[in-house]
Length: 96
Image 1 (tube, helix red, strand yellow):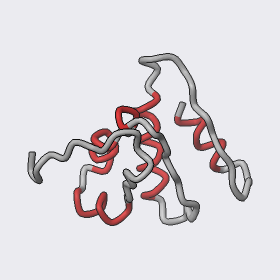
Image 2 (cartoon, one colour; image 1 turned 180 degrees about the vertical axis):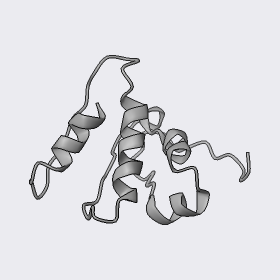
Image 3 (tube, one colour; image 1 turned 180 degrees about the horizontal axis):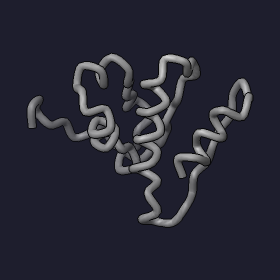
Image 4 (cartoon, rainbow, N blue to C red; image 1 turned 90 degrees about the horizontal axis):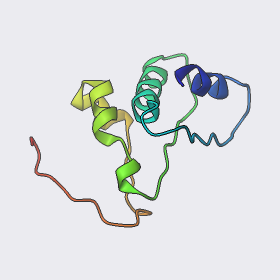
């Protein structure tokens, strides 16, 4: 999964859309988050990555935070926009 995502990013395209639709349990969430994190951490990578979904259950924000393992860096590099969500997010208090 990670190799497929990186191959797409590195394909030389100026822009594009990658649709990922493997079976449940195939690691889509885990590998998407790990790949986004690893790509963003490499200073040679200049492209922006957008993970879009209208279903909040598909937004792996907790997994992405785990991949970063650094709250300050996560807040600096990741923007989460809930404006297109089908349902508003349930907000947890900070620190929980």
